[in-house]
Image 1 (cartoon, rainbow, N blue to C red):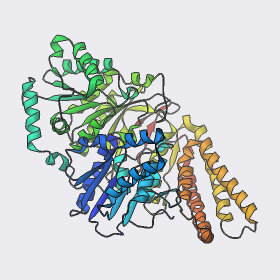
Image 2 (image 1 turned 120 degrees about the vertical axis):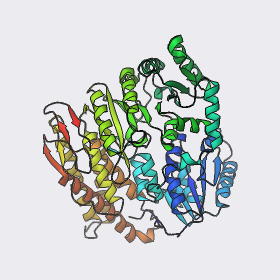
Image 3 (image 1 turned 180 degrees about the horizontal axis):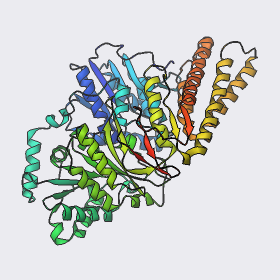
Length: 592
C-alpha cells in the first residue's frame, strides 16, 4: 500500500517536530499524551504545536511544548466566504506556511482531518511526514495507516473501539508515556497556592473534600439539563455531609446555569456550593482539577484536562457523543450514557428533540459518583474489579448505561459496560474490529480468527452479516482477477468491470453498515495510492490490485470469525465473554 514515501524513523532522531492540530480544544488536550511520548522518544527535539489562535491560552499548563504557532481559522473562513480576492488569500496562506517552514521541521505530524489540514500537510517542508497530506494535483493522501483509520471514524463510529488519545499516539508513531504524572508535576507551585488561597477566601478550608462540576458545553445539545445538575447537587450534599461542590464554567450562559443550580439547592445546602464561573485562569483551573476528588462533566475540554492530571471523572454522554472514542482516557473514569436506539446522533445531525439527555437520571448519576468516591483515585487491578462490580449493581437495563474505563494489555483505554445492557451489533463487533485493525494496520497478517457468537436477538443481523461478507468476498475476488493482467478485456471493458465491482462494494457497505469499516477503508486505501502519471499505469494497476487483495483477506478473516447464532457475544480481544440471558435483549458483562 503506497500511503507514505517515508516510514516512521526515516529522518532519524528529529531536531524539530511540528504537530499540526487545527481541531477542537478537547482534541488538543487528547493529543498531549502523544506529545509527552514524543518528548520521551526525542528528548532534545524542539516540539511546536500549530493550533487555532482561540486555544492559545488553553495550552499554558503544558510544558512539553517548546512553542505554539497560531492560525486564525475563523478569520480565514470569513475571508473565503466573503469572496475576497483569491490572490490575497493565497498570500495570507503562504505566510502561514512560511512561518512553519522557517522552523526547518524534520518531522510533521498532521492530525487536522480536513481540506485545510491536507493542504498544509502538502506545503510544509519536512523530511518526514505522518498523517494527512495532499498530492501535487490536489488529491488527499494518507501518510500513515492509522490516519486512514481516523478518516473512517465518523462514518463507522458505532464499530470503533479506539479512544482518540490512543489513536493520536499511533498516528504519531509513539507508545504510551512512561511518566503519566508529568503534567501534574509540571504545574507550578504558585498555581496550587493560588487555588488554596481562592478556596480559603471563599470559605473552603485546606483538606476539605471537593466535587467539581463542569455544567456547560460548547452547544446546547451537549448540555445536561440544569435541573438534573441541581438534583445531583442536592442528593450529593445530603449523602456526603463533609463534601463541598464547586461549579465551573465561563461566559454568561454558564454563569446563568450555575446561579440557577446554586439557588435551587436552597439556603442550607446552597451554602456548601461554590460558584467559580469565570473565577479561574487556565493554570488555576488545572491546579483546581488536580485538587478535587472527582469531576462531573458534560463533554468538554475540562474533562480531558482532569484526565491529564489524574483526577477521576464521571462523564455524561448523549446526543452526538460516542464515549468509546471521546471520553477522557484515564483508567477508572466512569461514563453514564443513553441507551436510546437513536443514540448517538450523527455528528452532523440537528436534533430538535434531544430526549436522550433525559435518559441520564440524576439519581443514578449521584449514586455513580458516590460509588466512584468509595474506591482508589487510581484503582489497581483488584480495586478496578471491585468498582466494576459495584457499578454493575447500580446499573439497570433501562435508559442509561454505565461504563468503566480500563487499560488493556496494549496500554490502551477501553470502556467496559457494567451490569445489564442491551445487545446490539456494535457491542458484538467492536472488539472484533479492534483486533483486526490492530493487526493489519500495524503491518501484520490478520492471524487467527476471533470467534463471534451471535446472541439470539441478533440472529437476523448475523445472517445479513454473512451475506454481506460473501458479497464482498465475490467482489474483491473479481477485483483481484481483473487487476491480475489475465482478464483478456479491452481497456473500455476493463474499466467498466472495475467500476461495476467498486459500485457493488460501495453499495454493500451502504446497505449493511456493519461491514462499512471494511468498505470505507478499501476506498481510502485506493484513494491514497497517489499515482497520477499515466506512464506509470502498470504500477497503478499493481497497487490497485493490492487493495482488492487486502479487502479479500479481511473479509475472509471476518467470515472465519462468524460463529453460531445463539451463543454468547465476545466482548474483548482477550477472549472474555458476556453472559446472555437467552431470548432477552440484554446481557451481563463479566469483568474482562
